[in-house]
Image 1 (cartoon, helix red, strand yellow):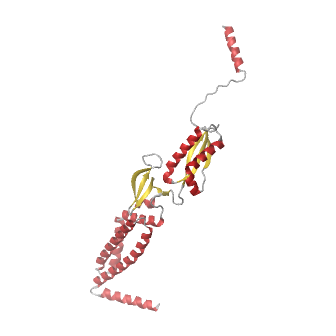
Image 2 (cartoon, rainbow, N blue to C red):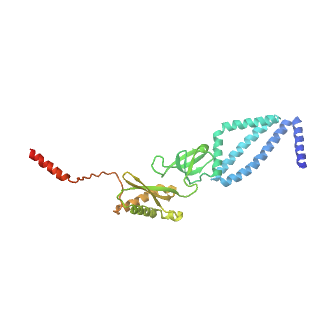
Image 3 (cartoon, rainbow, N blue to C red):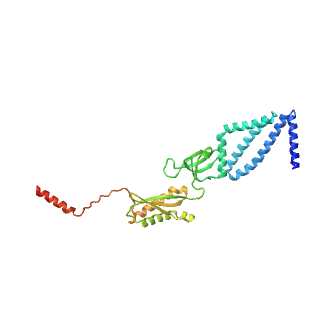
Length: 306
């Protein structure tokens, strides 16, 4: 403890001599510049090592570190000039004012870079993931310092097929948007094919046909997930709505559902026990008991009256 006190006292004496010197401006500027250079080198090594491990692409690390060095060079240069005034108060006030001005003028770029850091630290998604950001569905193609690049899914076409359109989403909006990742925790998501059958259909037969059709298409995914397709059903006015549910790889969702529908259609065509429910009208004439005799008597009476 005594050694530390002696060192601190020595530093205070040196600072006093500097502040009382006629060259205090130059000396203070040198001290500020050297101190900032040391701080920059220490922080640069730590940040570069960490960012290199977490970043998606090496070029992003290079761009970030270049920006980091340019910003520090500007800060060191400006603070060195301000320190020539020879006043520590001026240096402190100028540093605070400069930070406020830079923060206000570079708000969007700084927020974008901060969001990029958040993305590589928290990993809410990775390249190749299917996500929904700001209401836009797409597959992540790239994550740069300023933008996230998505290969849009859907858009002007129905369903969830890749459209080929590139969408650039500014990183700065990440802090205020809900991000939905299809495969953050699992590689497969739950999807369904709804099938409507009539009340006259054989329930168990319909269930068997639906599940077997899904197994035929999804055999490879079932082997990986060990999860079988299953049925959830509900009644509606004209029949029974059966929801065939299964796990699927998000990018192949539309493709898989098409194959399953095709398989179900073929099976229903050749199975007399099940029938699709579709809008139709049936008219049934039913005579009440004794209605025929009564009508006959009325006709005879009318003839007699005539």
